[in-house]
Image 1: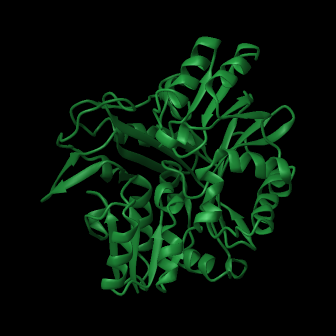
Image 2: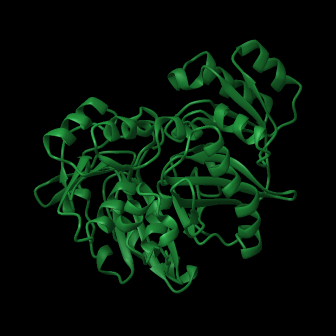
Length: 417
């Protein structure tokens, strides 16, 4: 089969590595790909948001199957456009992807179908939002409605921070149209859990749970990022909680989307908070998380491409999906200054990091020139180690990270700590 993988980050590097092992994948193209992905696929300089360009490439190259991995092309309807020309896809339709592309839609869906989540109010006028936070207790959460590269959420500890978040979204247009409407939510407390799940709209199969670390600096300080590291499985996610989530959150979400005529086929991401009142949904994503994918996919024993085909063909129930009885630790190595401004173009020295047993280095923001790799993004690498238990995985991951060098490299030292 001729296959295209849309995207160019660490998540896509992990997907490329694992699907390339399947003999059905004869020709694999990545649009646009990155330095690391180039080891497994032919990288083509077409942006993941250039839907017309993607469709044209698919036509010109007789593409049989497409994996649409990032949020933006899913929200722009890449799956719908590709399916229209006969290309089978792993990923949700534009209507189903709205569960991520509009936080307001997701909240209203949860309210309508009694799926547990934080209390909230919706605002489209600055003065009304400011009046509301002036009489609200802090901490309080401010969310831009639309996609914002994982950075559209502020947990405000006081009125000043809340006001700045509102003004940033609605007056300064930091997130463009995504911040024209905002959500203001109560701040839930408890351990956070991420659960990725394969679903074909009928069957839902959760993957290994994980714990993402969103804040930029040690001790969960600093601004939110796309994610600085992951521990899997999540220490707090027990079998009993998993059962409760399946009954009260996972299956009701799939059924709610079906009821709304938005059948979801792909990877559905559940961002959860384990509160004193039980698990509640913080957010949904319509795709693999990044860097969660880099922590969870190395634990998958079953063939990823076969799962993707089964999701598209609505026969997920026929598969037995297995995961390793192991743990993983993923540490993101970022450019100095991320998630604000940063410089790129620095050569990366990997040392012997990839020679450590159980370690995989996924490229997030890199470019390849011959046999050399250079930084090209804020999050540069996702270094993952798999071991029998998390303590061993963590030790190996940091051993590997310390062997990697590029100018301005930085990382959190407390992932899973």
